[in-house]
Image (tube, rainbow, N blue to C red; front, side):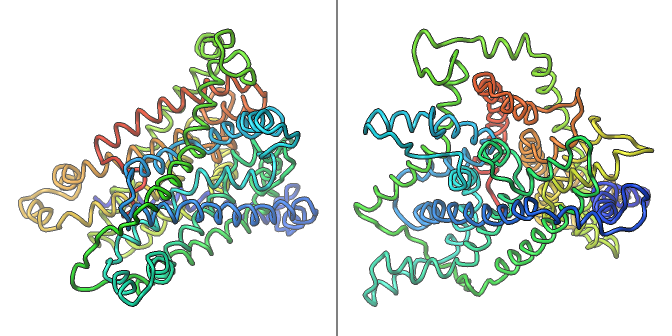
Length: 552
């Protein structure tokens, strides 16, 4: 058993500690001499363009998070506290927006909101006779809006879960004292869940500043430079990994600091009503206003899921997406070109599936062993192992990728561009998801059953294999599916580590977007969504329809 614990420690060091440590050291390493230097930081923050990119990222994160809060809080309140119809539909909207890869949603909104050819602007000009575009996706506001449409489910989950804990008696008391239902919501419900709103705001902010695909697809043509796209430029020939490492350090510090703030906010349970008795939770009757709230949820569903998917589907079957829907414009050539002619399309699909499957398996097995050590207090350093397992949660994917490049691209391992480095990076990136899931599942199993197996002569590994793992099999499978799904759409880490023959679907989608062939891009996006939705359906069957959004 000691050998297993040593292997667990070694795996965590290899996946988490060594890449981060190497990233930190490389940021102070001279490219020419290998000695200590601060020149990398001088280069990284010595030009106004680089500083502006960092400032743009902070502004982009703030605006995206504000839009996400505006979208999600009314939805969460309506689902949790009111008699609004269509609550299942609202959950479907949240899951659909979360499942839709952000860069694919960005392509959908390019087709909708491009100032000259976008469907919305063409309809606006036709309907009103106006010359100016109604919306411009190639703007700072447009970029923030598209990011928020992908990220608002995070706020929705935080706020809804917090509202579910607040009994309706408090709002009833406000009503008895003369407050309207709207004033009761503003004065009672929302203040009680303010920490959850702020926590969701912080998570969306961090998601936005760490995102690569959407800022690259929309921001680069709009000449909006942010931290992630600037890091990508440092990896253009010649690769300046030491400057990229120095440039990534402040992003890592901002992320870690805000995660601490988010944890403190969620820990302030005095903001939420908890009592020894179960409070009654009756839905608030909105009268005619319930249809207004339902309409808001429908609008959010249209702009975040339905319209982007519709235009992507239309483009995938079109000879030219801008010509609209007509018999003469319909074709299967885009799918035929991908399946039978494109040299990397089928390879990238296979790469994505098996990279993600192996990474999910590694992450879940490692998470199970670490959770077993931590929850059963089997080692004095157990909490340190739990910390390492959760550490990637505060590390943007793009920073993890640079750390893996710095640690394992050079001799003696020479892993750059191989399947191994991608699998390891995916496993490290999503290890916190697997660990949080395994830890929650382990706490639901009383240790007395394991103790009984030990008394009867079973070893620790035998106990895990025959007692613990079967009891939490459903939770582990749900965690495996979540890691698999998010790994299949991962772009931020993959784009820095792929080689010519290890491209994944997300990277190939980005390559197609740079080529400007939106018809083939939409067809390939359809194939990715087909794979994703099949996995989501399987996850809903195994672990519940909202398994992608549940938070323990």
